[in-house]
Image (cartoon, rainbow, N blue to C red; front, side, top):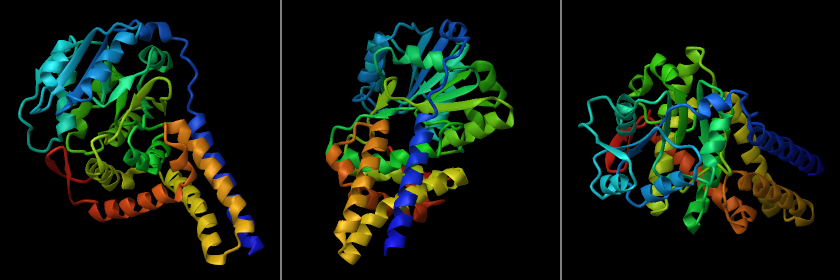
Length: 351
């Protein structure tokens, strides 16, 4: 039992340290050419489908930035609410999406139309459920050194069910950093965007960010990413458990096969190490031995979780519950891979 204990703690320490290092190592050095990029004509493009409850916070946050956009474009993707009205009231140029063509996804079609309408040299695509912290856009621009640059938003948690996204958010971040692209925020020069064929090249993909990153690498365009605490935040699935289950099922059913093998092994090693102490304690009853290991695991989860979002300390400390939820939903997602899933009122096939 002692040898098993030592092996389990060693795996926990090593894998946890590697996870934290991956998250911390992507704080990029400020570009020496930041002046050129911060003064570029910046076109910010927001694909939006029924986002009346999210858009105001994002649009209002733009007023807290020193950087003044060349243009702000909202693509109204068939909304049945006040999305377009709210966008116009905040000074955005609203483009009503043309009917969705065969073979396209809603988001890629909206982004494609936004890019065609934009006239800036630097394009920023951002999801409607995000917002910039005070000065966040200005700081994001200082990190941009050309090519494609992406930021994983800090996860603002308010309702209890949102805490269940902890390990999904972690897996997404580790599978993306530091040379992948997050789906919520993409900054890319127009020349680079056009050279890879833009969103038309990934028209039928659910997780277009994976494919855009691959297209950039194939065309020798640099790809960098980092976590966004203090720059960009978001809430995920604030409207309830149904949305959370559908959203993460869609994401993982489509994205599991695209996660780099080394990143996948690292996540699996750490999550497995997290489960060993509580399971071993329950099965053996030797809590004097396994209790401290559970405490070490909880401290790691608190440390790493707070890098990614404002997850509640109680949720982080009692991490086996959200971790068990992750395993259950991940299994469901794996079974749905390649099949039809539902998202925002549309049926889509997972990649």
